[in-house]
Length: 562
Image (tube, rainbow, N blue to C red):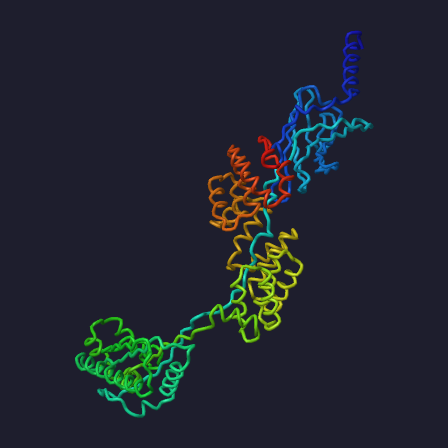
C-alpha cells in the first residue's frame, strides 16, 4: 500500500469513527408541527398528527429514536403509542432518516378524553439507542390545550322512547244490518225485521240513546238492486227499497222515542256491479274468471248484462248464488263512544286508580309535565298492569329523565322480558349502553328499534360519540336539540346551528353555552358574554369550564364569569 492510499484510507476511517461516535443532538420544537393545534376532542378521544421535519446532518447514522407523545395535565400525564425512526446505518424496519438530506416523519397520537385535559400540553419524549448505549433527550413541547366542544354530546338529554297509550276520547262504533228483498220487489217482509242482525242493531240504537257516554252520530241507508234487468226498472226498484227502508227506520225511531240521532242519510245504487264483481271473485263458480273478464271488457251496464246472459251455462249459477245477495238495503248506525274527560281521569287516579284501564292510566301520565308525578303514575301502572310492557318501559323513561339510570335500566329490561319484540325498550336499553360507553352494544340495540320515534336523536348522539359529526347531522335532521346544534357547530354550519338553538322549546345552560361558542367562532364578543352569563346563571359549574375553554381564548370573559 503506497503512502497516498494509506492516508486516504486512514482519513475515511477517522471520519467514519467520528460519525458513529457522534451523539444525537437535542430536538427542537421548531422541527415539529401538530394538526390540529390546539388539539380537539373527536368522539371520546383526543387525536393528533405530529409531523417532524428533521434537518440535514442532524440525525446520526447509527442512532434509532423512539418518540412517545405525552399529554400533560393537572399534575399527571398520559402516553400515546410510541413511534420509532432510525439512521441509515441501523438495521431495522423503522422509517429511515438520511444524514445528509434529513427527512420527515409522521407521528400519530391519540388519548382517551378526560375533562382535565382542556388545560394541557402535548410533549414529545425521546429515547435514543446508539450502539450499545441508550439515553434520553429532553422533552419538546409541541402543542397547548384541548378544544373539548365535541365532549358536550350528551346521551342523558335524549328522550327515551315512550310506549304510547291507546286511549281515545271518542271511539267510533259501527253496527249494520241488511234487509233482503225478493227479485223485482221492494216491499219489506216481516221476517227480515226479526233477524239476529236487525235485532242487535235495534238494541244498540236503543242502548246508545239511553247512555250519556254514547252518541248516535249518524244513521245511514244504502239500497241496491241486482244488475240483471233494465236500468229503468232497477233504478225504480233501488229507489223504492230506499224509500221503504227509510220509512221503516223513521217509524221505528218514533216508536222507540229516539229523537237525537245526528242525521239520517239515504242513498241508492240502481245496479250494483261493484258488489257483483266482488261476490263473483269470492265464489267457487267454475267460470268466474271468464265472467270477470267480461266485466273488465265492457263498461256499458246493458252490454255487460247481455254478454253475461249469453254465458248460459253459468247464468243459472249467478241467478241462484250471486244475484239474490245484491237485492238489499243496509242500515248502518255510527255511534260515538265518549271516553272519560281529562278531569275525570285525574280525579279517578287520585281517588280510585284501579278504576282506570291501562290505557287510561298511561294517558294520565301525559297530562302532567311534572316528572315526579309521572313517576307516581307509572309506578301505579306497573302495580296494576305488570304484564303490559308499556308500563315498565314508561316507568323506565321517567326514571331515566330523573337521572336514575340504574333503576331505568332495570325497568327497560323488565319491559323487554314482558315483550321481547317491543322496539321501545330496545332503543332505551341502547341509551343506557351509550351512557356506559358500550358503543357496539348500543348500536346493536338501536338496530333492533328501527322505526321507533326519537331513534334518530339517539343515533345522532351515537355518531357524535363515534366522532362522525357529518353522520350525526344527517341523523338529527331538523331536530331542535342541543345535540343537533352541537353536530352543526362541529361541521361548521354556524347559521343552521344558530337556528337550531333558537328553536329549542326549553333552553337550558348547555343551550346558552353552545350559543356562546357560536359567538366565539363568529367573532361576536357580545354574543359570547351575554350567553355565557346566562349559561352560568343556570349552571354555576360552567364558569370554571369557560375559564379554561380554548373556544374563548381570544375573549375577555371577566364580565361573564364574575
